Image (cartoon, rainbow, N blue to C red; front, side, top):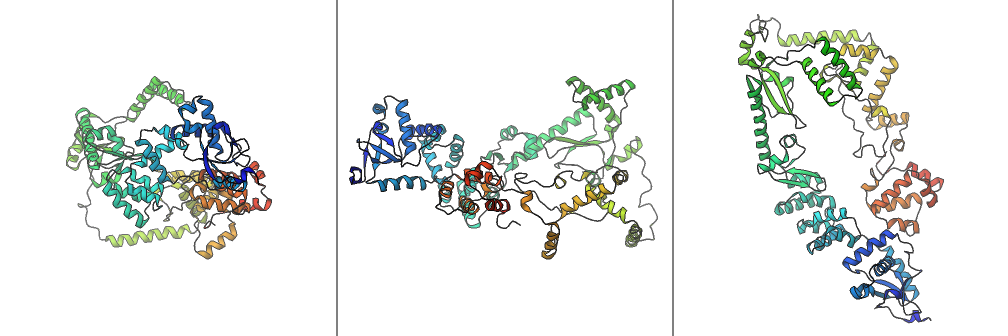
Length: 615
């Protein structure tokens, strides 16, 4: 029995010069950056975890567990020549001594295999304590060997009510759910929502909505219009979701009041400066034809201007430069002025008999709906020649002997006659269907068909997902204000192949299957293959499932047992590293597959693999 094997397990301090890395230590090679980072942590926080080793024959010890710590201490000794005087605790670190080689070997394997990251709740509390004691985020980052960004995100949660952090520590809520509580400063309300969140398994959206049901995002059109500074100047409070990087306005009544005041000021300036008979405001974000009809307005339009021959020639020259992207600033202003002439303006007489309404659109920009004549002003506008004298009204006409119900029936008969005739021209009907599907005809559809949205876009958008371009490009063209007859003639002139292609791609986009039997029949005909268009990646799948699931998948694909070295080394990785490695495996990275010894059978398994529930 050797001297080393007769010593009982104990702890002793050794000068750094007496310590060396044992061949049993699994960490024989460590990146210099990691050693540098850990050295900074130890210098700030001390040696939190002792070294472990076995005695050598020279009165020193060989370190079997704590190889990175030993290297970091040695780096500090090089950097600080007076380390023994200034930090004797680091110059003479404690070492737990193993009684024999078998124990030392077990320690060497156990420490690395059992390594686990801190629970987020523990990190939040630890970072919070260090901050309260005066440590900066940079110092905390060095102490825990993490990035400053990670520290800031955890510190943002350190001020949460203790009950919320307790719920996170007990895994009753997720880290994302805990982050939602940062938007609230009302602890009593936060605790009420926490109880509901636990019992009802609320989504992040529901938590935020419960914490601040009336809050308005800074992307709201009213907030964009008035500006955050004006809202705050009126006493409005600002909150926010630090993790979603959005600002919340906590006082919607104040926002509404400031919005109304700003809009009224703009309306007043139009009335004073532009000579309108009246100016009003609207809370709507769009004023269309329905609004004018509903309010009984008559509308007049700008009197178009006419360019002189010289101006027309100059306009064409500037337009060509604009198309080529070669306009100078002064030329751009000149072109805008010429366009203003062609678009025209309201005359003084028009303004004297009509008004405008000021409103704010969805983007927070001020818009006007001008040239509106109210009912009470129509007679004067007619007398001034701005409106045509109305023809005989329906009330003045003799009552028709045909009732509305009979008129409806007659209309249906006429429509039936048109449908009857259309049967004689199947090609026309098919062309109309293709035209309607590939163009946005709104209420002017020739066929009484409607299409439901059949969604096929995941929330991760194009990450690892590539459909035939016919399903993702050339969406239906907007035909608002266009001559539909002329457009349809041009559409038919493109030929039968084009029409059939349009019909096929828009019908494919509407496919959703039908009942079980019909769906099975369609699949026998088309033979769909999900992996043809989708490959799992870190973003679209692996980062969205748990670490244990990734471990199991890795072992399943590579036919590994849990105690296999490749399996255990993968299990020790951080979740993000696991997701990246699986993405590389699925992408067919040759070096990785070669290093792992992936067989043809395993490669085929990887190419065909789909998550449970996917078809």
